[in-house]
Image (tube, rainbow, N blue to C red; front, side):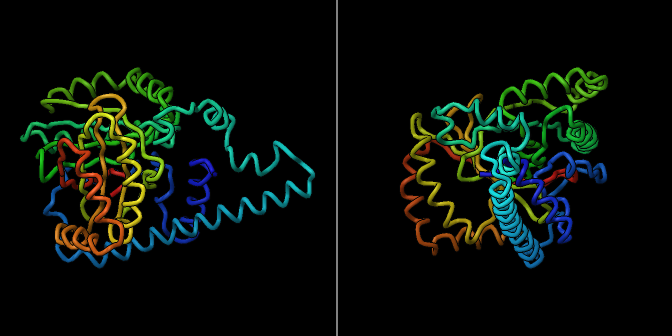
Length: 336
């Protein structure tokens, strides 16, 4: 199986040739764009945006399929070259599949633990909630937009910004940010690099005057649902958060692995993660829709897809509490 970096490189090259730039796995590059210093709002989304969303969604999915075919072709060609060269190890195929020396070392170090059964293993994600003072929302947008894109654009920080959103239904004036790191070593390295930056103290002091609370959890993505590459489909997002009864995470994963196949036919998933440090027994699912009416229509369509009813029937007893938030992407968000 290709490393994520190798797949990103293939997808990036394909995207540029097909005119769908900005959708590679390179979150940092996509996060550099900066829009006006105004907080996003649900009113920014037009009610008649479904057709445009569907078109962009299909282009994005076609791009993923094409990238997968290109990856397979590269593997095939690498095998041929390696066979002709009489090499058993260390040839082009090994380099293609295992990527950099750091990537090979990460693969070798992954332990067969309970978490590894569920997760892809090499990546840790943080989800950060900022509750912003109502009269400071635009000021917060300008401050965080500049700082986050600046930090994500520095390769030495070893961090990718998946996305930033403002909650419009749910905990209003709460901003949600998801970051990606290479395991916990990458998380510690990123914290060290960012907090020792010469401008961090000024940013942090200003941020504390704009928010009333900050909440962070560390999580991993489910192995059956890798986080999407950056994309600009438009529309809105729904973050569904589930608190499970302790001990039911593996069963949840088993049922959702099947259920996602049904949901993907009618809905656009962004990612799914389970918390390892912070709000334990919590699972987050992030979906993307053209608008609220399309959200309603597509959720209803799910019940007509074979297998979805069974997934609901088997997962509902596993849940203690559940929460839904409607999110609008910030101008700098790589996934929007």
